[in-house]
Picture 1 (cartoon, helix red, strand yellow):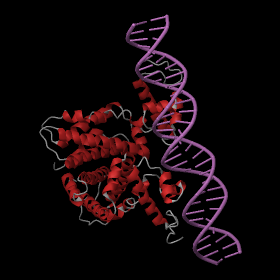
Picture 2 (cartoon, rainbow over the protein chains, first blue to last red; picture 1 turned 90 degrees about the vertical axis):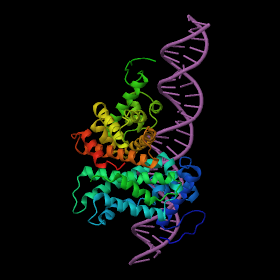
Picture 3 (cartoon, rainbow over the protein chains, first blue to last red; picture 1 turned 135 degrees about the vertical axis):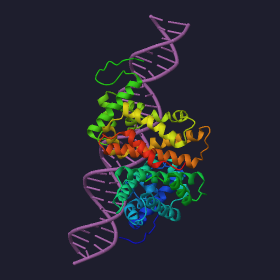
Length: 198
Length: 198
DNA sequence: CCGTATATGTCACTCAGTGCCAGTATGGCA
DNA sequence: TGCCATACTGGCACTGAGTGACATATACGG
């Protein structure tokens, strides 16, 4: 496996990890420029100097190229929830976990234009909802597995769904503000308003 | 336009409304029997005695055939919310509207197998999430347009999202119970737990 | 130098969905 | 009755996502 690329026109010869990341960045750029539907996978592949077949070796679907940066998050849910202080109730725990993610995303990755792109594209919104649903399901399981608390499936389901709603609403409000609002504060506010009667 | 069909093998010559409904019923039956992915639009069309092209004149997408019965609901949101007593807070209003829908759906249409199908099929879950999102958006607007209450976009967004979560969680619990639980009671419980500090 | 694993390209294929056009039935109107 | 507008339909060709099979090149370990 080569460590760095020769960059002969495309993205060939990178590390698999780098390749995936740069392919994703290229895809998002094209989506933002020309629109999601107007950009074919062939376009992306051609621009990257690889074949369409190769694109689908890095991403299962066209949508996945947009979510490549985020998808590692949902794999950490169980650990993050386990890491909550034992004193936390379910809702505080969810708030803590989502708050941390919020700061992470805010600091490192997600740009305003990316969110706009997702919000403006039905296919991406659907894909996003699907990711969110996977996350929610894992979160509900992890929440029930926490020692000291016994939570029935229904309540765990409900609380995680509500937490996801809080995150969504905060995200949309941030989008409406044109990226000027404080995302952490919005999330806090959402969690405060919804604070359930456990 | 003919009023009744001659039923010569397929579903031809029905009223447009009837045609759509029976086509949907046929599609759902095939999806349930053979699985969603394993059933092509051509299969459905052939079984119905029409062309694939005609199928797409009744349904924009393959998924839509499953949601044909529900989709009228989301067009009524604004009216239903407007019909809430003026004394209702936003949350009570949402609870009332969703409670009514719940009873309607429960009484008339949605079967356990249908929900199982949706829950088991990623593409259908995504499509369902999309419908839900459209509904939520309209509900948030309608809620803000209610006279007597001034609701900022963020809160309206948050409350409708939470209400949708309540409905989802109740629906999933009902599914988990194998269809034996009282859906109305579940929805009530969900709304009680989440009762937000408006 | 050789065998193996990995990454890639090419080709052919399925299937969802669309645009276009031509055929057919119906219902109103002169 | 004959004509015309308005649906509704099938057929066909096409785009584009996604997959499977097969061949090839390149690196690495022995």
